[in-house]
Length: 617
Image (cartoon, rainbow, N blue to C red; front, side):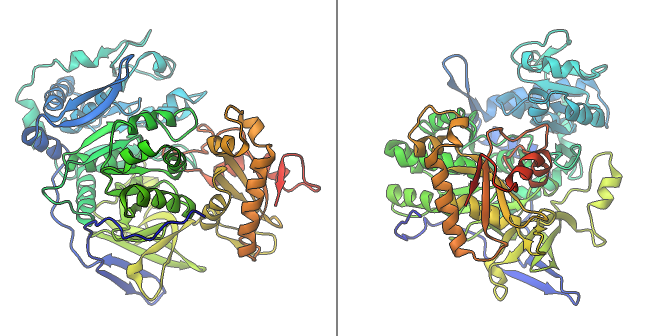
């Protein structure tokens, strides 16, 4: 494991950890902060309108455009004029109280402005994963969410890629809006024409009429266990969550303007709520990263980081795996990256100890101090962040502690706790699905999120909680031994670092534990010494295999029980499937859906004698 001098952390102002733990007679507990939640805005457009008047020339958003891929910068003032015109255009359509604005394409300047306009017009913005349109063979999920919403407006960035998806929908009575080019055989109007709509007094009246209970967004769950659910996000949910985040890590008035480079999709709650809303509330600048933490696309992120020095940077663990490798090889890039960074964040899955230490080693080398790794926990139903690590901690995998205004119920289940949430940021329910809403809450109104946790130190609850996987993911071996999937998966990936990017744990009703794993392609190429090697070549390369075997043998030597020992591995060449529900938008692997879809590989993993392609530890 990489080592580094334990220099002090760069100072960060955090909320005090003043935690109350109410213990009940049935063994359950309620955890809450004694510090009250500070007052919060009435609605999200209030932030946008404030900064458009206070700092009209400041860049709100930037995105690479055109053949030269130069940055197109959008100021708060410029955006305000366009957003108000779009708001007037939406109001002129007179869509009705049950309508919405459905956005099919990914993050863009126009996506952000249409979202703000929809909220100003008191129409829910409903961003939908582009994968439902572009990567799906049958558009089944797209058709389902469209029929559920029956939106009045559907927006696409570029009409051509979405032609097949649009033609699969019943668009009668729907206004289709395109930005860059019109789709063939589908009537549409230009975004730019709508942005020329003369602004009347209707816009101010509509903004003034926004209530805390007004639905601001309809955000879809990943559909990992069926069709996606439309989660109601009220304005109060979203603004209260912004206040919670600001209160947990307050900024000084004279602090530099926040600058963020981010790829997380806005159809997902972390990117669209925590990321976009949080930066907007602080009057910051967001550079839209068209890169992704996957081979062939992360190069775009690295190009951007050579021009943008963020004050805050967050990514999923797969992104940090690629970033750490790049920074270790390029001192100039690392110096630019660490120039202004105050805090690092991660989410979507647990960061491995190996990646944490590598990033801290880089931070010490280039800044002389360590950086706090900040993470939060929640879901689409909680707007999203309910708990976070608002203190200096060297541990990864933490859930943290509840924000002010949040109550966390802990229900004992074996040697860990099922977690449930109640508070102002919890959704009132699922759109047009009262049956699903009823089943999502317990008798006290706590949302049943389905995750589990354990205390860092049961005698010191202020040390926080550790994520312990999904309640439904854990299983028993044929010996009756329980396997805690969440913690084991993280440990296994770290042990085989850097050649495994992600994995699912196998072994239900089997004699031992195995892994179905995806290789970290770039790391495998480096280990194998084959810069241009294909995935098929890499999964059988002796040096890649040896790295896995050596790493997991060391893991097994330190974990003697059958519930923690990894005996066999298959490296998979097929990436996670969107249609197969294996992959969520934030990059989290669905354990159950993957095992069901790849049942043949699971069977192969347990064949005797071991089949070709099975790595025996």
